[in-house]
Length: 215
Ligand code: ADX
Image 1 (cartoon, rainbow, N blue to C red):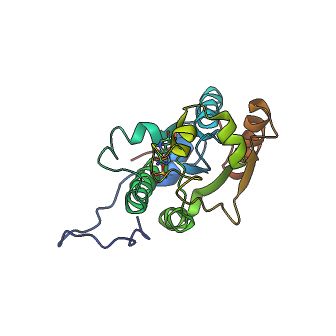
Image 2 (cartoon, helix red, strand yellow; image 1 turned 120 degrees about the vertical axis):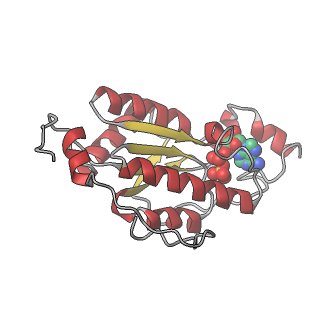
């Protein structure tokens, strides 16, 4: 919780309380470290599909993993937020904090949010720089629009949805993503295989849980 000074707390007189479980004790038990796999991309690029497939694949391989998905989080944690620039900033800030808590708890958090602003994604990286991986789920706008899985693009084109990303609201693609997954070129199986390879390289492999000497 060292570099969490992004937003100065409104509350006065709060101090940091130390845990008595260290990060490496958690990773020894889990067989891997916690971390954040931050998916970003246009609506319809494939973030949710790949996040849920990857969650399944990692779970089967013994990882502690959980997906935070935009459409789900916006029905709970971010139920008070819409799609104005300010609300998107706040949405990503909250999700970044939650994902960081998951990572500290030893879990791999996969986040599936458009997260259109580069500065917001970099803000999350600053909160949890150690194990933050920005993954660009990249499909061109015309492909996402042709897919139009939820029918939102056609509604946005008709002006029924305002501030729609890619149509009437901006999307700032990553300039140096840790991994790029072009979903218009690769089938889902290939995308998952590439993600698994990346995870095996970047986060330690699962080991058989050891029973550490604990006091
Ligand atoms: S973000 O911009 O704040 O990161 P988030 O990922 O949580 O967005 O939510 C995006 C989802 O909300 C889309 O998948 C889509 O289903 C829905 N949605 C509804 N209105 C909009 C809009 N104006 N722009 C983008 N997505 C929208």
